[in-house]
Amino acid sequence: MHKRWVVQSFKDSAKITGLEAVLGTPSALSAILVHREIETFEAAKHFFRPSLTQLYDPFLMQGMAQAVTRLHQALSQKEKILIYGDYDVDGTTAVAMVYGFLQSLPGASVKYYVPDRMVEGYGVSIQAIEKAYQEGVQLIITLDCGIKAYTSIARAVERGIDVIVCDHHEVGDTLPPAYAILDPKQPSCPYPFKELSGCGIGFKLLQAFCKQYGLPPQRLYAYLDLVAVSTACDIVPLVDENRILAYFGIKQLETNPRPGLQALMELAFFTRTITIADIVFKIGPRINAAGRMSHASLAVALLIEQDSTQAYHLAQSIDQQNLLRQSLDYTITQEALAMIENSPVQGKSNVLFNPDWHKGIIGIVASRCIEQCYRPTVVLTLSDGKATGSARSIPGYNIYEAIAACSPLLDQYGGHAFAAGLTMPLAHMATFQKKFEAVVLETITDELLLPQQIIHALIPFQVITQKFVNILMQMAPFGPGNPTPVFASENVYARKFHLVKEKHLKLELYQIDCATPYEAIGFGLGGYLPLVSTGQPFSIAYTIGYNYYLGNKSLQLMIKDIKTEAFVI
Image (cartoon, rainbow, N blue to C red):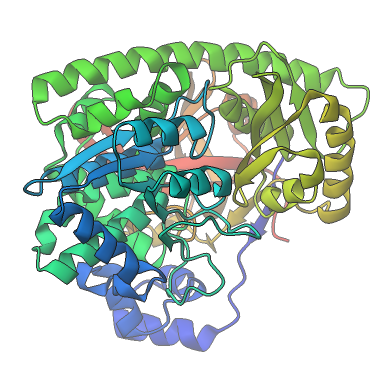
């Protein structure tokens, strides 16, 4: 897909020069840091040397005092507590963390519940509330859901069950009648960081509980590997508290992960150095496969399992579910792309419906369609006589707001700027498609519909010293809000070029003024082989990392795009 390269502009040269002077960082990296609002020595110290002591006081979150008091009451009186979470990675990691922590406390009576994606759908189900009532549950803690579950939580209250909502999604017009609500996106919540994952909200609840009742924080920090997986896979900004939690969670994944995550990493052939991308593309899909193909309780069972042998057996089962998911993913994606291509009207959005598509796959398919067609996309299937589905967006466009504008046509919806879920009567499908397209047409710009390749710095190869790479690696973990720096270099030549698996471009790159050649790979860029083999210079956009092969580690450029024409805009 053709991309427009945009070089990030740096307007405050004095701040860049000042930071370079106090840190000794190369100017290109100093400029990137200043652009990310790291402008002073103190800010850089916090960034490069994260500390768990930098986490905010959890009692700053609205509702926290009430939630902690009610939880302590339930534990001290041996009430039955139900931990209720969503069926995705964020929900299952949150359930595993809160259940695992509370279950380890003396005398705790704790169970967990994850809804069936196919039968109950997203959120707090009436079915679950009735089951909890029949089992004598007196307190429910929801994780990664609940902020819009007014009807279900009202039913719980009718049944004499208190509910603590731990959610991070956007707040609706009416809050549910819960005993306490923990969601920093409530307009009245003073908590200074609004972008925690659902598991992150659960972590803050447990952090507050430890602080209030004198439990050592290390007892909670043992669950940071789960928080890191949640933070990575829910695509929340990797800044502020999220970056701290992810940083230490990755350290734990590298040194002492829980058996279930260790087993998944073995099956996914992890290296010792773990990145956010590794978690997103290797751990996340496997955990999600349980809820997509069978039941997410299998993922929770894996994540709370203490026996390594049993954890490996569970991980193998989940891995098989993921292989089946991949097969369905490919088939449905091809059908969806054909539907887009054959559509008589090519608008600025895609709304696709097929009653036979697997409900657990359609969110992935929406993302795949965007990779090819680059339009806000809604993919729907038939479930319980309704059209239900998932929506995914392109960078810079808030799909949640677009769906909210169509809310009179919907039975329910929820989500955030990048992803959302929705359900509607079949009779509303055609009207929704027209309305959604009209909303997108009115609110999106042509610029957003053209994929951009952001260039964070234009550099020659001479800049890539070992010091430069060492500092760059310390800027990790990378993700939304702290993206992996993308560099561009002009007048680059290729040698020793060939294709890998007929679609990936493997080559060695050099510049005339730089004695050091660099290994490079462009995943999915095999079509550029004729261009780079001409002997003529070209420009590359790339990230810098390491290649691990047969126990050896070598510097490698990961090419994002290649151009021969001028690219700066």
